[in-house]
Image (tube, rainbow, N blue to C red; front, side, top):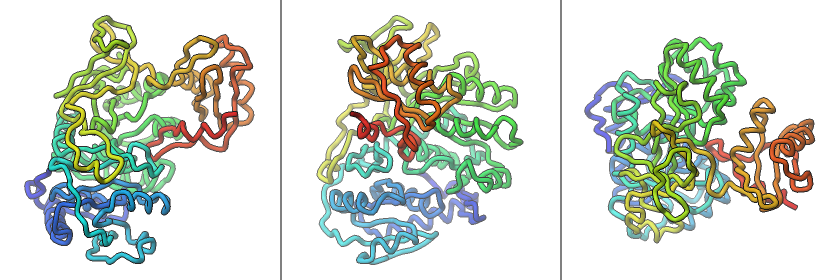
Length: 469
């Protein structure tokens, strides 16, 4: 996958404790761990934003060992379930998790991680081009994974390198978990140019994160909409960050208000703000808004990435040529993944998608060919015969109530809106009635302690169904 020898003694990874690993050390480490594993097989990689986690992942990929990327803090019961479903030959785990695997033999350790032999000796068929498995459901422990090929990963990473114009002077800092497709794509693309990864488990809310950022002169970071909501509250615009060159946003549609704020701030500070669009099913990225259009095309997710194409189809599958007409967004390109797996037998399956992905997102395009996401295909309700876009409703509420935490869901004729502030229950209901014209009886606003989210900050709408009456 990557030719680490090419970059020799250049620093590949730095952590917030000051530890460093060079590209040549990564190469040697990979050879060593591959000898311990000894064959092509499945390894559960329990991920953290640390040197050990990144080094293990890179080594498995470079030696055609198939990693299943999981959050290291996944609940024990859920992890045990996945182990029984997939029978991994090894587990690559942080030292502090060792006690959870008391019956397994440790055959190798380095960088705060251990390689544990599970005892599952029977090998099963793996599709030759299967590179890794990523979950689509965050920390829920679902056995459903996206099957990504080596071609998927390489083509998408090289495309990102091209449109972001990456080189070996880049120093991206981790803000997203590496078991999340967006966080992993940052690692993948920067390894291709010999950049230096700045890895930390600290969050944006911690002073230590920003201390590490400034000391190591981070040049970029990525974030989901929730990341930018936090940055807005932290008064990011006032921060002195002279090393910062650009920031990227994906993982859901950013509100128009925040898009405008961050785009204008980037322009004023001679930085780049790049909105991107992607899904795990397309490895990572499918579209991007070039930085020079960040202010001009506020609200847009941009154009197709190099090597890919975007189109919009109607309910009959016919391509929509007209502008400002809503249909389902379709992506085609070499980064469209192989398909899903729900059990170990599925890992023998080949390419089930043929390079074409029906995204499930509803979109429009403008007269210049720029695309705009208007909602999810399944994120619509009918209230007394009137169709409502729940994503748009969430954006309306957040803009009115100062980006308050909220999430809307429901079933036809019953709209449920979840908020985290008791004082806003009635005001939110009145606001929605005013905006939609719906009867009060069709709307329930419920206060909950927190909106359930996955590792990537995306709302887990299925968990909200427990509150339906």
